[in-house]
Length: 362
Ligand SMILES: Nc1nc2c(ncn2[C@@H]2O[C@H](COP(=O)(O)OP(=O)(O)OP(=O)(O)O)[C@@H](O)[C@H]2O)c(=O)[nH]1
Ligand SMILES: [Mg+2]
Image (tube, rainbow, N blue to C red):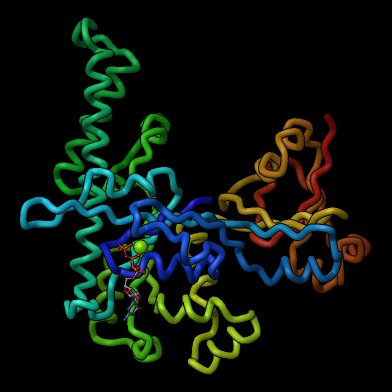
């Protein structure tokens, strides 16, 4: 899974990126000032995986992971006015979700925070970027339609009709997420990487002192997001960046002294998971204990395919126990002895926290 960090210049994107990646990308190579994107992989923290790792001591422990892309905010000076470059979002095209970092602190230049306006600005820019993409695509399809008799239904004419619909919606300033797309439409649209179809989470970057007592402005922003159906959370990117350099123990101590129950990384990752409709399942083997991310509603056969295509092809049965049962029994074998491991066919719907063993034959 890949998540793109977007936001107006100076909103705290790179600070958040550094906090998330815990300095894994050295500060001197951080690239956004030079106009390139920063990319870092973050392990999804999971207490359940920690338990399984401690219980089985495998050679390797593999967390589910999320790749974060810190886009460079490309602003073009257009006469006296700054505007977004056409490639403003080019770094975050191929992502599964977007995090919009919104400035909730007074800027270094003394500009007060205008978070709702900034959120709308990015929303508008996303619509404009999609409109440009749709228009470019239309020009290409137009060529394919050249010489085809009017009224003849071809793949190109179907695509053109869909593009017209997308264009009309975008010209009205509508995010494409609000359109009702058929299954076939979705298949066509998938290849375009349209930004307004991606789930978006708003991260309001607020001053440290407001973390424990939200300001009127923060409350207003929360309300706006909630009314607009946008998942929202508040962060203090600078504090998070600084504490991300602590050890785990130091970090927990510091956070609890500030009245915060968990680092923002964990919360943001959970929000991303939820926005994408993802859940985790686990596999245990001698060489590796591993957490896997999968779409909620996926079946045992999909879980098998996530692990290895051979497992899906030769699928026989899935042995499944809930993590809670495995933990309560003290391990997989112990759960089995207590009759807590169940056999399911390929249509079994995987639940968050399932420990899965696929029986297959190729
Ligand atoms: N007061 C305050 N300043 C912050 C906070 N987060 C970031 N900043 C400062 O804001 C400035 C911009 O932060 P960055 O993280 O570089 O922002 P950015 O969005 O990556 O900026 P661009 O890549 O230039 O668009 C830096 O001087 C940060 O130190 C915060 O929570 N509070
Ligand atoms: Mg930056």
